[in-house]
Image (cartoon, rainbow, N blue to C red):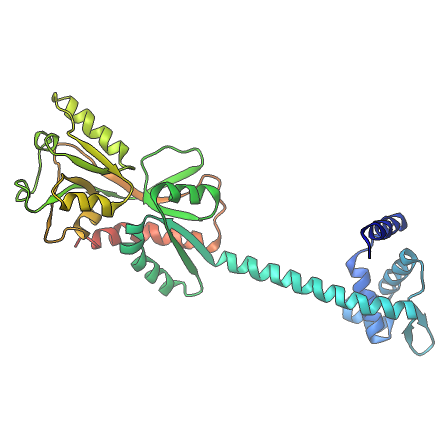
Length: 320
């Protein structure tokens, strides 16, 4: 049908005031199927007068007779038969659509999308997800391993339900719940003269070229303030977004870096050593992030509770 003709038809329908409840259409279909007002009343769990009134309202709105009543049976008119055929198809399509919506909604309730950084995704989360799935087999956890800035953006935009990460910033859009506090260790080549020590002083640290991850701005600020109180300053600093790049520079003997203890010990190969800095607290809080006004679904709520109960122990177990 041409567009102009469809517009004319639509305007005509509006002019007729075709407004009715689906229950009236369903009641008519029950009468047409069963051939009886009383049988339709039993099926619809209403009184027979209610069935009669519904069918009459539908006939009045459509301005045509839909059923013929005899002493023995109710039969549909030609218009009634045409309405019944088309209405069955329409209602079946509507039911299928509603079931699809319900299925998708149920599936969404049983799935949590978790954003995190690659190292946490590879080292800490797998065991947590495994124990969670053992407790809740019907729940699905989808992990998105992203760079730190993208982790925050995924939660803010709603593309992720939760994030597992360290967090040093302030945000009006995100709420951070710390679950474990993790010290930052210095990582340097084992061939370095300081590699045999367990600790490193601020004076020694000031003489080391540093390669830092870009997100460690707060750590750099803390170090700079502590050194400034002693009349010292940081040596050459290079930044990178990638842990592998930073460690490659360390392995090349170009300096040292800082990593959380769980990550530093994971990466402490035969060619690398780790040292702590006892003169200053450089610990970072690791935990879970979610939107300030988030309405968490069932899977996300259950996984959040699981993180609260097990994250710290799992993080420390990786260091054992």
